[in-house]
Length: 471
Image (cartoon, rainbow, N blue to C red):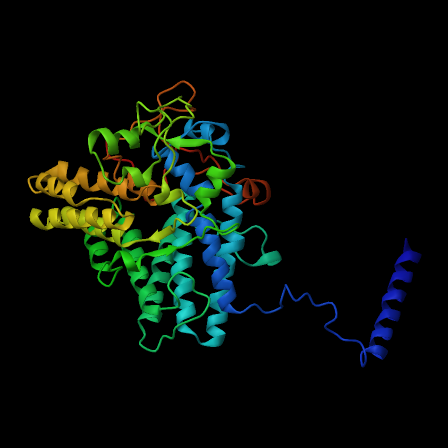
């Protein structure tokens, strides 16, 4: 072995000499891969991050499908989705989401923030901070504690510690506050590579304000001023459906909406009976044809599977969320209006203001999805205009649950409002537990390789802000 090592050292030495004598005529870039440039511009990184967030972090199968099954928009009728409906979701099931959030999203956003400092470009910095705050919110709201302050160091630290969720929320607020400063600077330039807002800092500023309101609202069980603070944060928020922060997909191979691709490739979900019946039998909601397909049962144009049912004739996710070009929303005007309605109610604003805010929110949702709503809204408004007290609050949250269909944010609302909308858990013996889950299990890669991974976590562990109501 010793002789081999000596020979190897000698060979390397000879190669070094040869390179030194030939470098005048050998192209030193001969082994450079043009598809893997050494320095990627911020514009290219940003485009890739936005696409990855839309396809995985925000709209991906392992976040929106899973939480949508638990929130009873969908019913799992086969394979993994059926297990999810029975409240089996394992460490290995969410591993891809965890890894992608770190490697393809947060790591690259950190890179943009670093590059923006070097380039002195405040818009890239602000946009990256908004997207990073959004990603941190998605990750911590399903996993709780997570690596952040000691993460992103590569081989320098392969076992980062987990920051508690309270610290993560402080980071989220700091990122959004700084983004608001950067994007609100009148000298902030337009940027390239932004396929969501066309590089316009003013639109990203609106998104930052709205996300800040969202994350403040999440803390309503902990902070008495959360509703007032969230309402204040909406000032300067998203001002119309046209300004929604969302990613548009295309009807072309490799560029299609993630739920569309899932239904094409797997299709092991249908609409849930609870959601369909709420829209169809209880409310006669004009968004139903947009939210769900017509069923294959001619006696029931729209129906969803109940617990333990696996009919292939049931309605499926509709074009609003599952067409090839359906956009994935990050944060929207509709959400902002529902935050306003809830916060007005919770801060004891005059009931007339609360009613107007709710009607505005529902109207915006109808308009966003292109529903035929005018006649329906006339009747709905007459009903709302005599509603007050707890029934009015429940209606705000029920309508928000409908409007945020297929969005993981609805899962956060359900937890922080203590299930005010009244969803029932899977009652069957096939369920691991007859209680709706509240938490993701730790990802398998962390369990396997990071000894700092929290122990004793299961699907019913509450995250920091999800305080149990007093008994």
